[in-house]
Length: 157
Image 1: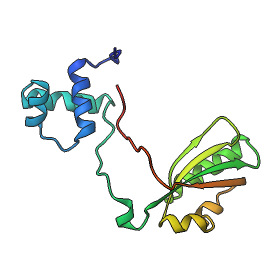
Image 2: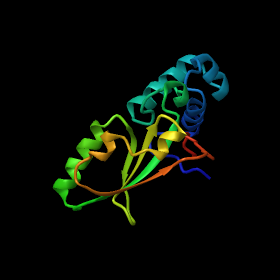
Image 3: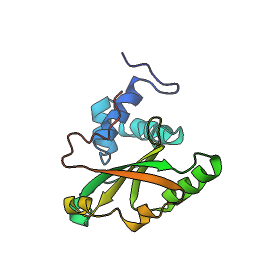
């Protein structure tokens, strides 16, 4: 059974599930799905946005049609795991358009990054210069994705 987050009821959760599946749904259709008027749904959606349940809306694009159809994951080990070195690395990663995701992790490496590359053939080439030049890096190890088995973006609740 789902535990309701503070400030949300079961109808809110149904609205959120539907918006995850179809962010462009009209308030009319959304109202039909949750058995509310379009006005009531509109007010609930605006409240969910204000309260931070909904962070934004976006289109999902086909990366291969835009020239970046390959995905790589990169393990990063820093030379020193001190606050200054980590901050310089963090700032550089945030400014690097090639990095899609970067996470500070526990385990054998310090960070795990996800980047897009042109295609599967690019995975056999050296990492892009923008990635190789990140500051404070002792070692990087890349893993090219051959086949994506699951790419679910929707939260389960």
